[in-house]
Image (cartoon, rainbow, N blue to C red; front, side):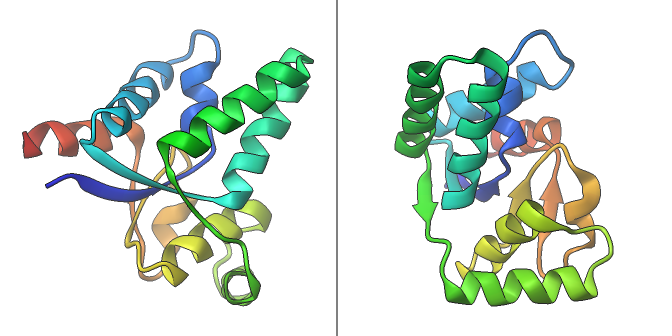
Length: 146
């Protein structure tokens, strides 16, 4: 059985970026998703955020869109709809560590019935109903399942 988790945008951002301590575990997570060892769920907003970041960093529109399409093909995309928006707003009201896009990602998980979030951002640990895993811990959890 594979791990199912909502993937924060920082996972593919670090995986695609330059040298950084988070690069290796984030890249391992993308590979695990490609190998079927991780059922990665993404919010539509996560793909938009990835494209925005890649465009800002690379100034290459084609590359940014290609990276977004690659991520969209790797993960199951959940919609950003009125139900997600309402839960996101409630999270912003009630969870001091969550704002903006992070609230949308967390709300997407909660509305979609996903109870685990993989992110380098520990703010997700404060979201009721979500279990937060940093990328290295997620890689260990996947390895333990094999």
